[in-house]
Image (tube, rainbow, N blue to C red; front, side):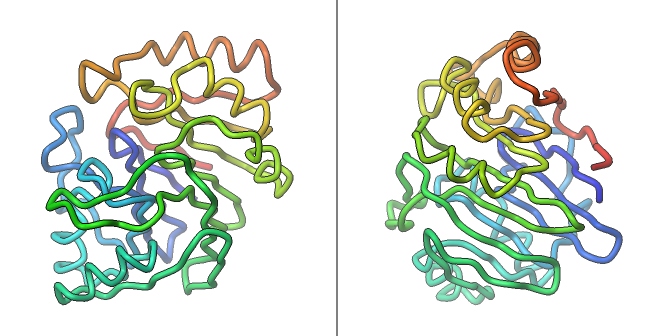
Length: 224
């Protein structure tokens, strides 16, 4: 199982047979060296509709034929534009060829760049390659993260940028509630308003929790 950090909140997951992309914001992200031609997903899983998460979904889905897995509203939106969508909602789970997807609450907002409502923002639970991965999406800290953690998390991706999401202090509290084996900070340093010191966050996580914190640069890969 290989994870590649695409920058901002985006990741690519490959288990040798399947490829899944989460929140692919690449073309207008000057911080990532990744090119769209390097991605061939069978599924694109979206946490919400904001442009820095929906990003290159249309271009990827149209080229690769990927199914867009997200809220019912986002699935409907892409379906109206000729793409394949699979709509879900918070609390729901579905088994796909690549693995099992579930959606959790996220405290944020969700609308497309054209103003269309994108449904509720969500966190993502993904069982793939024998691992359970939690992508928190864009969210504030909330106490029910403890319930998500009870599912047993091999990896959690949490935003640390502040302003639009949790900052480092609340993200540290989230790690304590989630109790993952590993954690990767995301959604920081893409824009000036969300600049953070990820290495300082790593030091606090590893001092105050049992989790290993992995700081990845855009384009970096990791064997899980």
